[in-house]
Image (cartoon, rainbow, N blue to C red):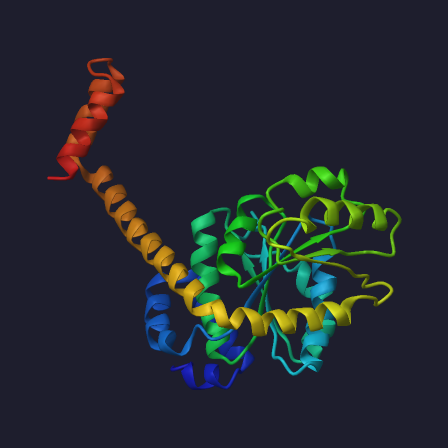
Length: 305
């Protein structure tokens, strides 16, 4: 059954089916992306990241509603830590995002599967599906976990870093790699004590940098700062649209390298499991008849013939 006509109309069932294909079936995924590729790349991607417990899901829920009022058509992809039992995504975020879903925002959790390259691959293609279905912006929510943050900032046109006053030693959390990536820094849960100190710390620490990011306070509980945040995002979307062709060209180069390296890796894995030279030198190495470097060089030479 061809899902493209329904996908183009933005029908939820077709979108869900397409993203499931991208996540779970590489052969079908390639066929699907080949068909839609030319009609993608036109939406602004907003990455929202920050420590766990910063209140990202509730914030995105309210912000999506406000962005809809501003005439945009947002969709949300929440990257979840993989559920180790089923290998699927834990759907906690969906529960917290019912309000925006009701207003027509498409929300989907995708599993991070623990591998950084895999995040990029299924995420890139899930974004393409949402672009084809007419959503703009596409908001990516990521778990506060080191490597994923940097990957998100490579994929996103706008990166938002969310803190809250109660995420522990605030300045230390700020130092951890998040200072270089944000276009907007949000002190969320600003109804909590310690907000002003954290806001000042972020401003002193990050605000004076060359990039000159925007620093805002938001509170979902008190419904403050969210309209301003949504308006700021909409203004930034217009600005980032101008640089998008350059950034997209760089991203496609990275993606192409990733694909080539993955293909080579698969080929090498296959060759190593079926290669007689590998098992011959492995046995020699295990009996100390050869050192690891010599063994490695000899196997490499035989593979590259």
